[in-house]
Structures are given as C-alpha cells and as structure tokens.
Image (cartoon, rainbow, N blue to C red; front, side, top):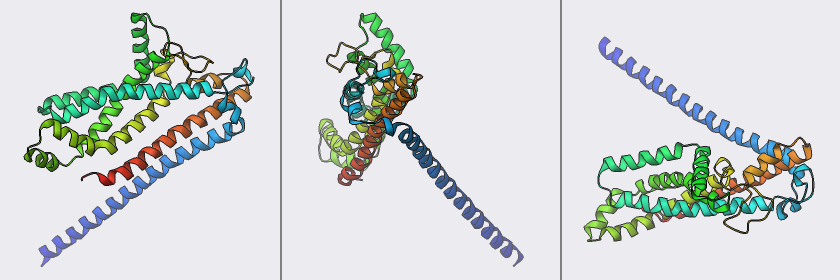
Length: 295
C-alpha cells in the first residue's frame, strides 16, 4: 500500500507540474503577443501623431517642386510611383527566378541532400543584408557601364526578395499531402501533369508569398540607395533614376526644419499603410483561397 500510495502521489505531482508548465507557457505566449501588438500600436501612434498634420492631398498627388525639402510646395507622388514601380518590377524578377526553382525542387529533385543544399543556399541569400545586395548591384552597374536607374534598382531589389518568395512558397508546397502525389502518379499522370496539380494546389500560398515579397520590396531602402538613385521627377524611363518612399523619409528626416520632418513622418505613414494593407490582403487571400486546397 505504501508503494502504491507513493506512485499515486508522484503521478499527481507530475500532472500538477505539467499543468503549471503549460499555464506558464500559455501566459508567456499571450505576453509576447500583447508585446508585439503594443509595439505596432506605439509605432503607428508616433507616426500618426507626428505626420498626420502634414499629410494632405497635395502631398500625395503632386511631385516635389523647388524647395520642397526645405519647406516648399509639392508632394511625394514621384516617390510613391517610384516605390510601386521598383517593387512590381522586382516582384516580376523574383517570380521568374523563384517559382520555377521551387516547383523543380518538388517535382524533379529526388536527392534529399541536393534539396537541403538548395534550401540552405536560399536561407543564406535571405539572411544577407540588403545593403550588401545594394553594394553588389552598384559593382555590377560599374562593370556594365550603367548609371543609377529604375532598371538597376529593379534587378537588385529582385535579388533581395527572390529568396523570401522562394522559401515562403517552398514551405507552402511542403504542406501538400504526400498522398496526393501518390494518387496522382498512380493514376498514370506524368511529372508534367503532377506539376500542374501541384501548381493549382499551391496557388493560394503563391499569391500570399507574392504579396509578402512585394511588401518587403516596397519598404527596402538599402538595396536601392546605390542602384536606383533619387530624383524629383516622375518615373518615365527604365534607364533614369527614380525616387522611393524609404529614401524620401530618410532625406526629409535629415533636415533641421520641423515642418519638413513632419513631412517625413507623413511619408512614413503612407508607406506603413501600404505595407499593412498588403499584409492584410495576403492573410485574407490565404484564408479565402485556402478553403479550396486539399489538406
């Protein structure tokens, strides 16, 4: 009886310990979630407080005029359009490079060692700071005899977001049920036909990955600092410099005039709203389109 009683007490103690450990982890996760949300709220509050007064339709709809960066008239339409062109072009470059690579990895690569090596390379590329990509793009421009331009910024920024798009899509494709491949091939489908099934299965994740990569590209400053340059003109050529919102915030915030610094926060608010909107679209699209995916 004494041995059974000791075993029963030890079991109760272990269950209580597991219960407290689980409760502690739940509260820690809630605290982390609250902390992340609080940081986002503080950032938005500061940007809105400092920049809402300077935000106007003129600032959004007009290009900068003479003296804009010292308090003159005009707006940041050139930077808004420049950021959109840079991010869209970079997304096209990243899609052309990343999507075939990922589907080839899951369709034709049979060696797990080769697959791990490809993923390791993508992870390393993802971890490289964007300023290094900017330096690489600058060196490539010098070697090819090019100047800072929209095209150079697109290519460099495309290299920045390519591993992000590839690894995100890779994780999505790995969620495809293994039985789906076996059933498809058992019915006599070729690898090309299985690839078409895999593409349809991964379309929701591909759309989400593209939106997230686009949001990453539109907010990058270091990669385009040396390659895209900066100008007050609206984008009109692939071979001319182009402005971007992150660099506009940097230049406006570096002036000693409070009114101009307020414009920097207003530009930051516009950029933040664009990125938040893209992130929300990505999550909503994944939730809506994911209902038609085989789990």
